[in-house]
Amino acid sequence: MRAEDTRESGETTDSMHRRALLAALGSSLLGAAGCLSDDGSGGPAATATPTDPSPTRTTHERTRTTDRQTGTTRETPSTGTPTGDAYVVPGAKRILGPAGADVRNATGEAATVTVAVAYEGDRFYERTFDVGAGAEAASETIVASHATYDVVVETGDGRRTTYEWSIPENWHWPRLTVLVAEDGSVRAGCAWPSEQSVAVENADGSARDLTLTLSGDDGTVVETTETVPAGEGSVAFDVPIGDEYDLRVEATDGADTASYAACYCRTTRATVEIREGVPHIDTVLPVCE
Image (tube, rainbow, N blue to C red):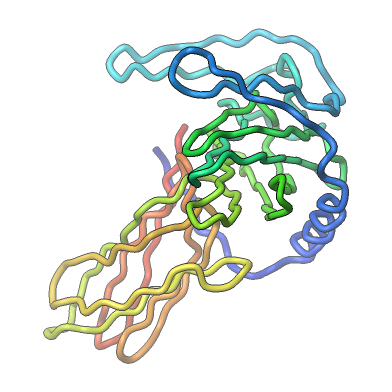
């Protein structure tokens, strides 16, 4: 594991440009169809293929190594274009692990979910999944390069969400997660919903009220207030879908804000120190390598 410096928050011109691309992509989403079949293992197996071909398809060889103690398998970085339909961005570094999508339907009814992925306006992937109630489906490998992709997800009954899928160069096991939540909302991100926590060191001699707020592009997603005693403690909170967020912590006499990533194999570790009623956030971002 190694740590990555926390990024600065704030929207850039590139980010606003990608939002415009998302809007254009979403207007022409539903063009592919697929189905699921029972593979005999107790869960559904996806059997559809993308409608749009990848611009480059050249086979290559990879060397896999397995750690006998942990049972984990790693692949060496690719030196050629991955086999199949994985999208390659010219000049970008290759992803060490596969990057595909997992689709989960947490509702009590079957759902049809279409996932489309684009790079700089080029929609190179579109696939429809028929996912049973409480079931999951997995795609083939979608992308092979570190880059930022635009994702649009739409259900058969018209519910839709968009997502900016950013895969930095030191993140080698990314995953696109698509969720039809229990309440019927549609979400896309970089990890499933999870419970996270922030360690708190209250250096003051008395208890303090601490308000923690997690916000994204659509505003506040989590807000919780707890009274933390003097000494060490923690504040837990639920993350509705993996994403890059802004974390704000407010105490009696001040507040502090930092970037917070809650992704698969890339989740921020945050510690809050309270001194004289003012919180100070310290973050470290471990990544798999």
